[in-house]
Image (tube, rainbow, N blue to C red):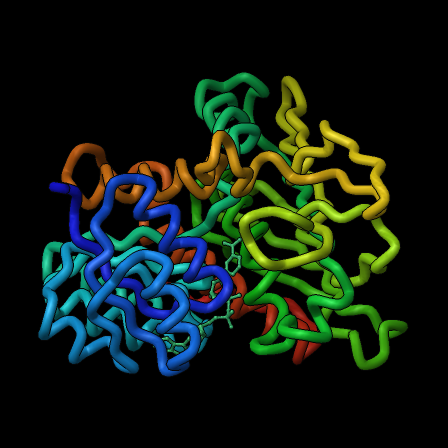
Amino acid sequence: MTGPTVAIAGVGRFGALHARVWAEAGARLVGLADPDPDRLAEVARAHDVAETWSDLAPLLDRVRPDVVVIASDEASHVGLAVTALEAGSHVFVEKPLSLSSVDAWRVADTAAAHQRQVVVGHISRFTAPMARMRAGVERGAVGTPCALRLRRDFSRAWFLSFGDRVHPVWESCIHDIDLAISFARTPVRRVTAMCSGAAGDAAPSVVSALLEFDNGVIATVESAWLVPATAPGTLDDGPLTLDGAIVGEVEVLGLEGILKARLVSDALVEWTPAGVQVPDLSLWPEEDGVVGGALRREVGYALAVFTGRRKPDVMPVEEACWGVAAAEAVVESLRTGGPVEPARR
Ligand SMILES: NC(=O)c1ccc[n+]([C@@H]2O[C@H](COP(=O)([O-])OP(=O)(O)OC[C@H]3O[C@@H](n4cnc5c(N)ncnc54)[C@H](O)[C@@H]3O)[C@@H](O)[C@H]2O)c1
């Protein structure tokens, strides 16, 4: 095998799926790092990886991988990314890139100083409808874009199990803030956000934010973790061990037209003894025994960027930094109740 060598930091639920997809894309898994010995052993066994460490730094000393994939808890992303870049690896880091704009720019600056690439795992950019919408906006299919509407709802049970590991804006809204940036392609200059006063303890899980971009485009970003267990599942039985539902829509309104899409497909409906499901076929569907969809396209894109076969045009790191600054402003606006200007470089 001659593919790039890859080490993975964080082999929990999503890191284990990354291990599979990077291997299926032709990368050679040469090491895993995770403080949880059970997770390490399970994923190492599944992919026949010999080097397993509780910390990333000694693993890097040992295997010097071309690429480090970071799929650990959100608060650890920056430290791991800087460590990997300083060791000479390219970095794929799951969203959010960081939990502060200062840290986000630190990662970008470290990458530039070491002439390495960073790809942030904003998977929604790599779904087929979003890629087509972005291309449509770029070639002027709807004229001048004026407004964006993005809505994403998650299962209530997810909020109760992991949704408050960090402020939920970093878990859910960050996806849609990033999508809005992918259409507006400028930084956000002002943010106003509210969370539902009626939602009680679940309040931070019900967020509405208004974003104003430098080029005058406005975006509404809405997120609620209130989908009940009785709703048809969209992720059940997929390769990620996460039962529940993601439901959402994206609209781009231009002077000459409108583009709109559902965030996850609902083309297939299954009525079985297991209940009703509308399995998502866009994010990480299993196709002929391998994982396809947006996750496979995202990993293929990252490999092409890391091996110099394409420019980082779909997910430039500075756009991820703008997203972190905007999400930080949303959290601050929720705290203060007023408008907030995202941090600039
Ligand atoms: N793009 C998507 O659609 C998507 C979907 C799910 C998760 N995610 C992201 O993936 C990341 C992981 O989420 P998850 O659901 O797999 O969480 P998880 O809790 O299942 O797994 C996190 C793993 O990271 C490990 N870890 C913690 N600190 C570490 C460190 N310093 N070094 C190495 N490993 C460390 C933990 O032990 C755990 O095994 C998060 O950033 C999350 O937002 C993205």
